[in-house]
Length: 160
Image (cartoon, rainbow, N blue to C red; front, top):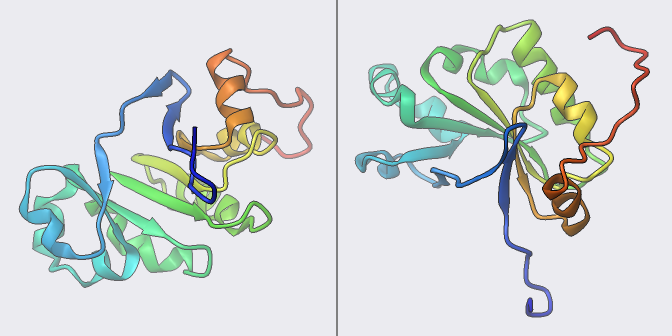
């Protein structure tokens, strides 16, 4: 049982199902000294020497907050294999647009991960926009995903 005010454990879900997460978040570039896969804040990743970023490409991810413009990450895209887009509150949808732009305008082919407040009714739309990894803590969403229920409506107003 969770302690009061404790966050529920995060689980990583992809369209193939739940899996272990081999990425960890860090606040500074020193985390790249090891061999693991690291997600750094946008400002930290942008401050890395470009040669260092290229060498770490397969194990470098970047975390983009809703208030940070997607254009700030464009020059980093060839040097990262994961972009984590933050949803600090469920009502902040700016990262939806970022995911779509990363895929359609900027041609990013790496993993796009949703982190933060990922809720059951948002998942189908997130999948359509190009998200392919989700850090999930909502118990309702976890239960549905364990049963293979991604939900959604078959009729879409936007083109796919």
